[in-house]
Image: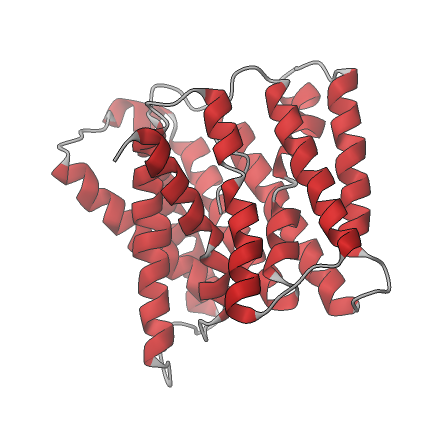
Amino acid sequence: MKGKMRLITTMLIFGSIGVFVKNIEMSSSEIAFLRGVIGSLFLLAASFLVKHKPSFKALKANALLLLLSGGAIGLNWIFLFESYRYTTISNATISYYFAPIFVMILAPWVLKEKLTSGKIGCIIAAMIGLFLIVNPGGEGQNQTLGILYGLLAAALYASVILMNKFIQNLSGFEITLVQLMAAAIVLLPYVWWHGDLTFTGLKATSFLFILILGIVHTGLAYFLYFTSIQELKGSTIAVLSYIDPISAVIISAIFIGESMTVIQIIGGILILGSTLLSEKLEYKIKTPTATP
């Protein structure tokens, strides 16, 4: 399978995450923890199969950042899954794609990058789009709360993007493997304290879906992603990454009958368009806008 087709497959897999999460009868923290465990085990097995040997010296040098970013990924999943529960998959996904806007806002302070007029325009357009998505008073308090959870997930993912820029001498595959393991480790005390993971009364479908989420949506999807981006240009990666939110809207409409108003569609176009333009302004793009 060629690099472009692998990336398209990955984005389609990511686009179906919401439908699976909505049908898993477990708490968001349980789902996030099990996703980290299953996904990291899959990638660990894949690293052995391809005979990939990580640099333990580099892992040790970046240990703190890997732990912090891994913890942020775990919390990011919890908020994203909560967003799916309170609002539509379309609203949650588009809110989550606000992550690069947060990166743009923080970059002048964290990365010492200049905030150009073009980037300011993208931020303003995204803000307007978010206002249209939220649609105050139009869909109820739960919808607004769900979008807020999506934005919190986006903020956490933005922090991961910024922290990853300071991680050195490790490949994207190595970083992701360790971050998934760190996510599971960080979430374990929280899940244990709340007395979750009893699996009491868990339906067979929920058990099957959590396996699919861990193996297909995490392990396999991340493996396909990191093997594909080695063969593709940054601009190609950026454009193809938008298959994720578009497919999420289509899949949710087909399988669970969700819909968006015309105003919300316009808001979604403003947010996704501004994030795509912001990446074009960066010239060099190494990661997709947001990886759920």
